[in-house]
Length: 334
Image: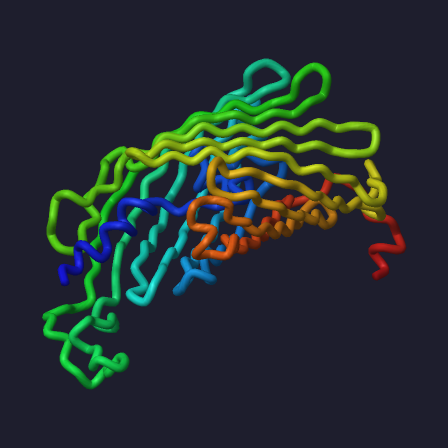
């Protein structure tokens, strides 16, 4: 059995990681989103477990940190810097990618209500597979698997490394009616690096193009956050859209730190021809956001997965280096 044939479906069908909560993975979505925050710094964590009902699951771990620099010293402009990393692995061979990216953004002010940002991203990645632990047909003795039998294959664990680049542009701001918006586009794998584990020149990371957007409508009681995301990579494409609906709990103090509200969101998204994704999200003190979602598989794989797709949890913290509000005397005493 040729190992390349075994791994080909994985390399073609799943070249890039993806998240159901794409709006909570800004540096995976678009490098120009580095530093695109109201706070001073942002830290994000993501864990995704997919298709565990169909055998060995696909597991993805991601980490990101970004911040805007010189925002108060450049007449409305800023420099954004972001560092992100992910580890993705699947199956008995633990076939997967590990990648670290560094993003740089230049943001400039367009009038009083919007910002335009341009971003570039460079990264180092490694693709690997643990082939020595696979099972082979020669190890079946007629009644079952026998690990003592020879594999009749000369195999070794494989890995390869590569350099990568991406670029993006985004526009965000507030309409006159108070609706907030953010839209953008990005291109990944500009260098189309070779990621073959066997020295072939046929396995490259094809360029991936994305468009994305989100809005925030503030009603009298509820906040609506519709979001969309679309991507094209070779013959594969993904379209994802839906909305979160939330309500703020508690009150905010404008000049003192004694009161800061929380928020709770419910939502549902649809990944075209693949999954329905219900999710919940809780925001604590306008700083810490915890999101959980689950993919209910409705594609042709649903017979194998029993409609079970992927569980995903995100954690995002947006902090300020200083709070301009004043501490009350009783708070300082605590």
